[in-house]
Image (cartoon, rainbow, N blue to C red; front, top):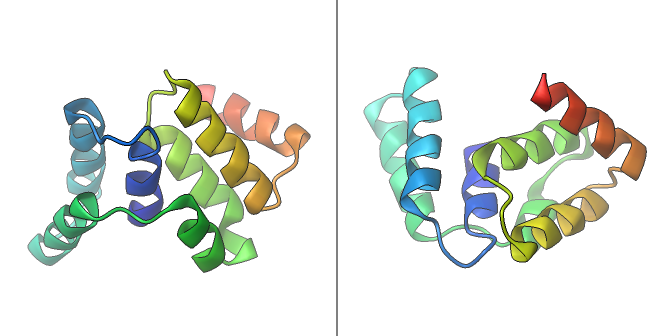
Length: 107
């Protein structure tokens, strides 16, 4: 999930400080240890591409990976919207399911 969040944060070509803090805070609040936080820093320095993420995501984790990506970013650019569109398509998430996931995230 961490890899997914970082890849999404890099969708616009830059992981800004707000996105970086959001990711690190989620890891800390989950109780991640120092080794995991070090892994997180390494991933932040070299994020996976969308294609790598799709290829490495088992179908059973498609929805949680997509949700992690949505939670990791503030979708405020066309590149981020395109990233999520392509991710959903690559993970086999249809429009109806995607809308349901977004509704669940919104609360």
